Length: 241
Image (tube, rainbow, N blue to C red; front, side, top):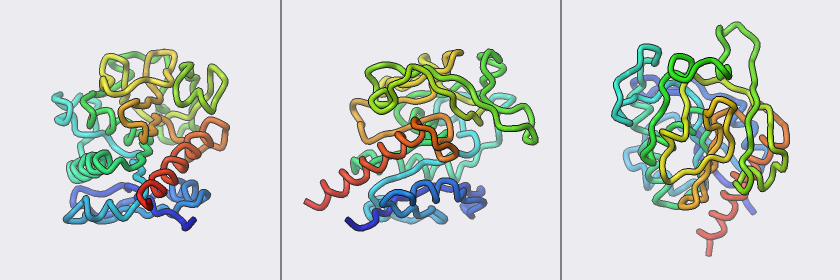
């Protein structure tokens, strides 16, 4: 089978100009029979553009504008990037309509929840507390990690049989059961109630985690990319019939 093209979102400025494209995402995706193509400009017809791909990866980045979940900006919130927000919500909605596999990582995980009717905890330390540290206190600090609890009977537990895992963490916003979309179900939860992974029975092509599996080669992170690849492959086969 040929190498399958998947679209990868990237950091854009408010005018839509590319700021950064993480090679970690690209290199990890390209380890499979996939070809990661970063999105560096907006196409006028998203559907006609996206139909050329076999998967969509919504990557990490800054805070999403809280207007999308009917809240005002929290004092600890970042200045929104309205261009990127609008583009990625449109990409997600078209991908869902196409039945396209979607991998959401960190910001991408949060965007999926919002797009499906959920919302966010805008600042975990000030709203939930510091029982679990989800982001390092200063950029110069070493990377941090914390424990998550895997829920039995979920998609994650299908390929990761242990009840707990240690994952990297780089976020100050998050999702709890109170703000989770009713279309989604948690598959991993931190000790403070922050949801770290979810899935959907209605949209089984969605794979989404709050941490950064592209930075790790543990069994759990490998399983996440395996799932996304298999979804892309099955999507391509289905479209080819």
